[in-house]
Image 1 (tube, rainbow, N blue to C red):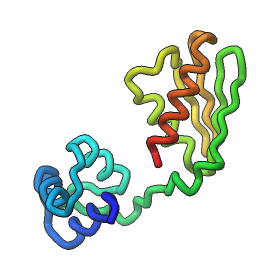
Image 2 (image 1 turned 90 degrees about the horizontal axis):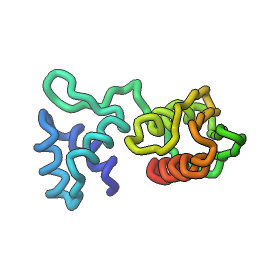
Image 3 (image 1 turned 120 degrees about the vertical axis):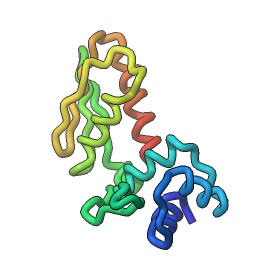
Length: 142
């Protein structure tokens, strides 16, 4: 069973009020996520602490990025722009992840629609570096 499935199973079967407890239960099941990984997975799954325990919020259903990977394209628009085309609904999350990246050399910012992201780069010589960060983020979201 993958990490996401284990998390959902455990929070459904037990009242878990602390991430450290959830982390220990996952380790007992053969999963060993770091605290930061666990926190990211909870967020992606729409799991929040409600009434003192972790629960999945029914209205949040994370998109499956892996099935959509083939539909993401990066188009260079020199001198200082990238256009990233995604499947519908994926652009805002990818743009937010790019904006949150701590070390993106030359990134001025992003503007995201439903399926398109415009990425502005401050220095045209850094266009390919920013593109490689976008590609890495796409791989990490799988």
